[in-house]
Length: 411
Image 1 (tube, rainbow, N blue to C red):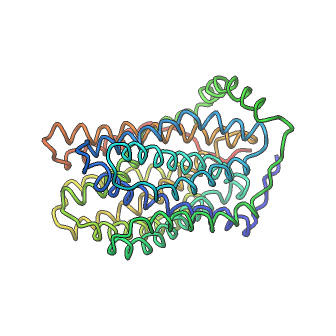
Image 2 (cartoon, rainbow, N blue to C red):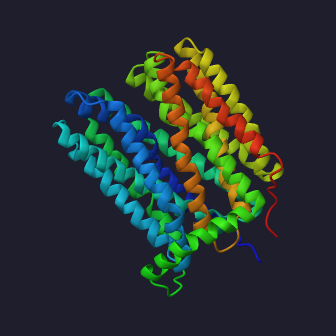
């Protein structure tokens, strides 16, 4: 099968979508979580961490369960771009609806939970279709570099979002953060919808495609189970992403609770992570194409074990900022290489469906890691250091599972 040629204009349009939605990625997990817990939940006397956990776990579970099914619909109907646009519009509207979340008792706690969960479902669900475009915008020989470029551009978008957040935080103007997220997401999505390959409708209706997708989900699972390399990669991805996502969601908490960072200092720390993640993505793109994504992923898993150990021993803020920078280098690299890894293993014509299962593994993997972190913290009397060390086990296990997995380009 002839591979599609790479068009730089299309690559940049695809990457700019990540620039836009990264505003949500960085500010939702770090800033809205703080606002929701401190301004909305705690004044009611309700357990803030529990409500935030419900918001994240519930939305991630919904994404995980729906992604293979919706990805199958995209492939069967040939309407990937239309579904990406729908999820994007839902996300932007939901983010603007966060302006309605104001202190106001338990009713507002529930409303805030539902709106935030809706926004997160839209963001995470849209990534299924966005990621599925990678085989369309880059040939196998360049997928490592193009995947890395997408993440690098996304981290640049995160830096812009953090720059906008800084003065708003100092002024206590939380609402401007949600407006900034929505505007950045909307503006930089436009090139993708104008330039990415057009939908190729199959003539199958959404209802018929939904029925077929539901019936074939079991078949897809059996197909994946019969593909040795794909099966083992997805299992490994499920395991090691537990550790990566745990770091993303608990880095700010660890900095404030264990090392007594202020909110403004947390923003500075996050900026360091975005810069180093950008550098890491770009630096590891060419080696990923040369040596294969398996080589990069395994190297980064060793790197992540070292980061966890360093975080365990971190005492001062300065040293922890260095650790945060090292984590950023590994964050961009492992995400970009993982996406390129899957792109090498999936059958042609089933991109959205397989990236749906990729999302299933990644999002269900976001439950066990945070749960482990929380349980270890409780069992050690609120000490987060052993919890950070426990996360290293996920990286080590992923390294072992990837042993023997091939990542040769498809014929």
